Each structure stands twice: as structure tokens, then as C-alpha cells.
Amino acid sequence: MADEKDGKWQCYIIPDLASWTGAAASDHTPIEFYDSYEQAAARFQELRSEPYNSEDLPAARLTFGVQREDPPSAADLLQVRQGKNYLVDDYTRMEAVNQSPEVMDILRQMRKDLGFDRVRVYERDAYGGFTGPKDMAFSRWKHPLKPMLRKSVLKELKKAPEPKKPQKKHRSKTSERE
Image (cartoon, rainbow, N blue to C red; front, side):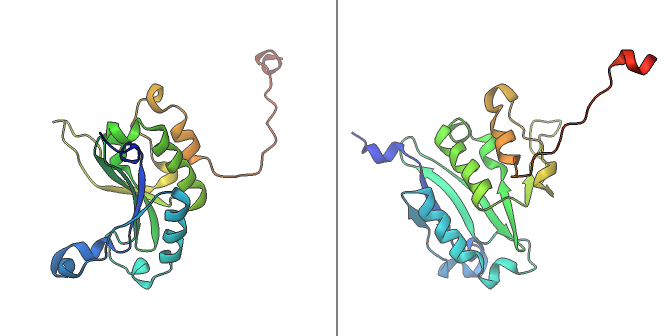
């Protein structure tokens, strides 16, 4: 019988994902696992100022993700590239992740606490495969999930704390004709 913890999402931090590729792969940074979002976010913020996170190289460096044991699933959600926080859109193509209220809560909290500057988008091509990645500002990204599946997630992810603006008064059609 699976441990109760196995079905719960666990956060992870990879201090330097680039150390997992090429010649550096034999001396890679370990994956750090955390039982709470708050612990992982604190560690992310601690590592965020490391000089390698601001290098002018396109590779992903500091990485924040989620995983669970039963059923098995994992996804990177946030990566630092060239000093910018990138939302990783892989979760949009992973039903186990994008259908989880717990992961959606983590994404909302991540947006609030850590912020997303940009996203690397992989769009479907005419043959059913994916093109990409296309690098764009997070504010311009159109969430690919159907609104009925994730109607409030995109709105909450893109919501930035802004002061309320006074509503414009609209003239009625009658007054325009006069």
C-alpha cells in the first residue's frame, strides 16, 4: 500500500540545471526536495542571487518544480534564464499536473511570491507536433488550456496587484445619436 505522502505533490529545487548537461553532468547539483511550497520558495529566493543565474547564456539554471510518487508525475514550473524568471509551460500538456488543484495553487502562489517575467511557448504545428520554443513576455502569453478546464487559473496567474482604476463612463447609443 502506498504511503499517504506518495499521492501528494512535493516541491523540488535544482540549484543549477545546466550542471546536469554536457561535461558538467558528472558533477551536477543535487535535486533538493521540500514538503512545503514555502520551504522551496525560501530556498529558491536564497539561490536566486547566485551569479550563474544572471549569465548571458540561454540555458535554464535555477529550477523550481513539483513531483509526486503515486501516480508518478513531475514537472518543472519555473526556471531562471539570463536573469529572468520563466514559466515552464510543460504542465499545460501534462494532465496529471494541470488537473491538480494543489499544483494550480502552487502556480498561483509562485506568481505572487516569485513572479514570471517570460515564458517559452511550444505551440502545436499542422502535423500535431510542437514548434518552438517561442520566447515571449508572460503578459502576452495565451494559456493553451480550454477555458472550461482552467477558466480561473490563467486569470489568477496573470493577475498582478494593481491599484483599482476608476471605471470609464460609457455613453449610451441613444446619446450618441442625439
